[in-house]
Length: 197
Image 1 (cartoon, rainbow, N blue to C red):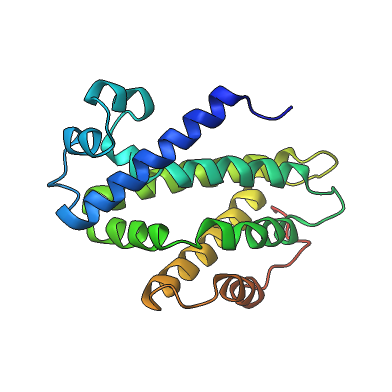
Image 2: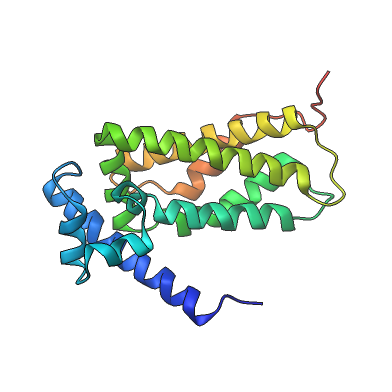
């Protein structure tokens, strides 16, 4: 069953707040922008802002969280006969263009790189995302994969994603992310029979 109108409306409002906030962060700097500034620019009260986000840091990572949920769901839905590395490549490749296709995402990644507090939060979010992806790989029906191998493959895939993002930012958003992702997965050769000793 699809999400209801209330949830779609909530997602739309969160996306609008995030867009306003990122614009302010880019112009004024993250540390110089307050929750009050964001709320005022978004046409709401500070109290209303906190109905959607617990902190201003959470605004920066809103899209990352949504994508994480979708990636985990897609991994769980892949066919059991597909190997875990191929599963990761297929799912991450399918989401690549959608995840990082906008100017706002480029601005967000630059903002994160330039703000130590956000780099720390990004590390925390990635750690949680890796755990959820590893769990999803292990939880696929009909698939037998141990925790070590799932963690190893997830961390290798994350390394590819990090390298792709860095190159994409360096190229000013001109590099083709899907081609970089495919190249990265190809360059990191993974033995499909890799098992914990």
